[in-house]
Image (cartoon, rainbow, N blue to C red; front, top):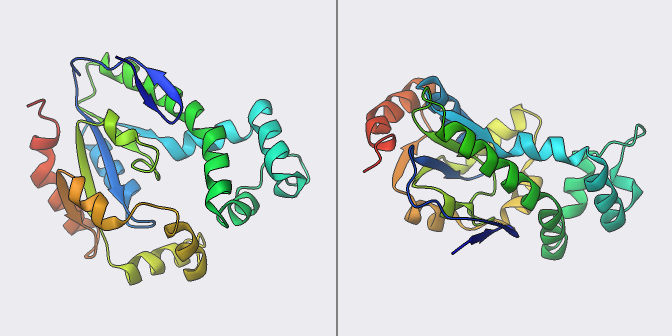
Length: 216
């Protein structure tokens, strides 16, 4: 029976050659850092945000965005201005669902293509999905194992501010449209703490890595 995720249907594989690992956590919790550490250990990382950025600049997606959100979310060169789009989108649930309906099916289709590619690559130990809205999009159903990245709110805010990504108000807006961290932590198979620097995080990943890449 086919599985529907984000509006895209694909056949459920009866057996994965390599485990697919999803990373959960709050905004600026360090999910991409965890993904990078897993990549350093021989895993293939699929960066859903990077894939989405590519699709945002394709003609068909730009036209759908223009139809749904107007010209104000484009820059002078006709490219989607992600900051302006986010400012408009994260105001009500209907807008969030509208942009997700445009982008998520395409991202998921490409993700599934990459999963198949990496399953046939003997150099890859496991496949990591680094997707900001993994649980919100229902993509956890495609994962064999889930890691929750725990991080204190003040530390997340400090990291986001230093990168110039989000201020506290913007962080709150986006969190309002995401599934609670408690639920994400509850459904995860493993948890790592990212409050004490990279070396401590790396140590924790090393401890759970053998279990992560096991197909048991």
